[in-house]
Length: 305
Image 1 (cartoon, helix red, strand yellow):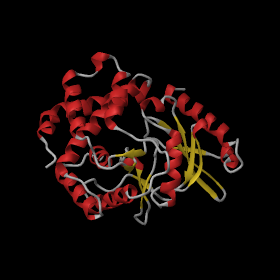
Image 2 (cartoon, one colour; image 1 turned 60 degrees about the vertical axis):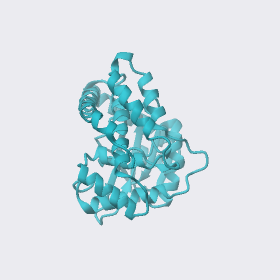
Image 3 (spheres, one colour; image 1 turned 120 degrees about the horizontal axis):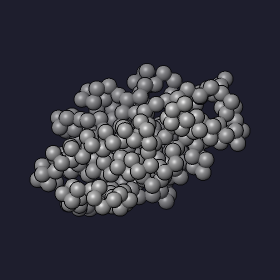
Image 4 (tube, helix red, strand yellow; image 1 turned 90 degrees about the horizontal axis):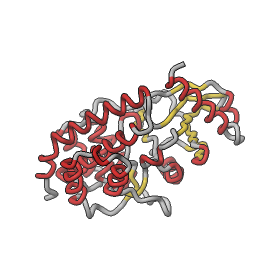
């Protein structure tokens, strides 16, 4: 058995044990688990029994050190599920590291090509709807400057090139003060955008959610969907058309800042990961770092006017 197989087997045992402790999920504990690959920080399965078709997720240990907050996720999930943005919550159990939601039948992870006008319009509308919600009382604030300092402080001093750190400090300073804080997802990538066969778009995996500057949701989307400058411009246009406010120059700065925090996240993951997870984390970190260095001088020339 490989290390990866052993990790999945151990996670499945833990998830089954947690599911068995409550009546509304006990039947899932003895069902067949179909693994859903793709995440470096969680284990997930499609689990079904008669009249119950569920998504089950078990969070890896150490996620909290990288910025995940399973307690905040539970509060946010209940709100966004009622709003029709995320699937219905069946059970959210942070102490057990367990999340169970409705399974979206026939849904596919990801969206059509990132530069497709319809897909961009859908995502922009979904984010604008999210940002207009009244957030749960007491939900955490997610500050990317604070997150960057916290992630960097956990790394060896030599791990962060001084030029990148200096550029990050300047860019994050320019992004303050931001817009009024609204409810944000903060991790809008292809696997977290789930499309029904009929075309409805859902947003899943909310463990990085909280109050924040909405430009970082747009930056997250543009960065992780690898949008061209033209596509990012269309994202701005569609977001404004849906009722939001964003300036293209500010989005470009937030996109660089998001990538910097994302790069620190992958470097942090490398400290605890092993096997294929570590290999993939190193690959992604290297690719993002090269992009940050290439774009550093240009992003400092951006202004918000």
